Image (tube, rainbow, N blue to C red; front, side):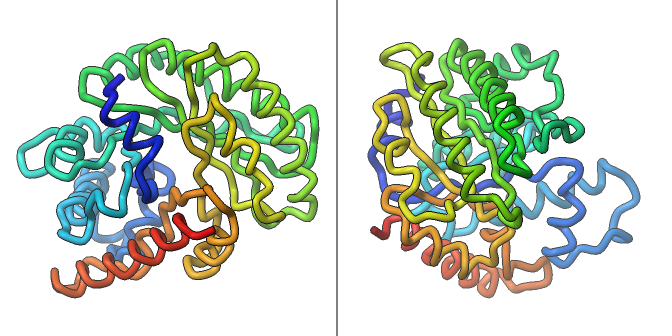
Length: 296
């Protein structure tokens, strides 16, 4: 583990930029950026366009370590370069931003009101590549669609199982059991989730830490005991479908909870903006998310 990166992730102020849209969500991200589906005719062209979008964001003078702690990369982004430098290396050496990697392969079909992660038979190989490329930590996402105790336990069990595999490689996992923000029993689901997470942390060896990524809770400061837990490096929040201003306002009421926004970070950025317009819009966005992350 890179100790300088670990110290930054533990102590520095800021938020995590989630730049890890994968195959299924890439067309939607491009459309929001102003690039329609007819602008490309193959997956290769689509991924070239999204890499160009990410590169523009990462190289922007508004995207700095002053307010951005880390960035989560899609596997294909990790394998590419920015200005002739491997992406993870560019982030850390040129920007001082910690590189993280999305490792899950998407969601399995719903069962017991949850979607666990699809199998990852090549995970060890991916983690080894991540270590070689200077990746500090990983992110893996599941989804909870109701307050179903059996389903939530299955999600948490799998998250910790994968998390321990990541820890064994010397990296820090971000466990992401997302609770869908629109469900009627969200608060109850969060209560079941927190209890399962706290129990799961008991099995993490002393001296090791994980990060946890959650939906912004219904009850303010609900995850305070996770934030203060000695085996938790950070607790971060996804925007989850809330509009950015709403997400920032909700986040700001939760002391110690920082953002890890994806769609909300890209909101307002378009391909046809001048570089000045792009940089100014991004600076305003980053400033708002940063202020929400350090509030409380």
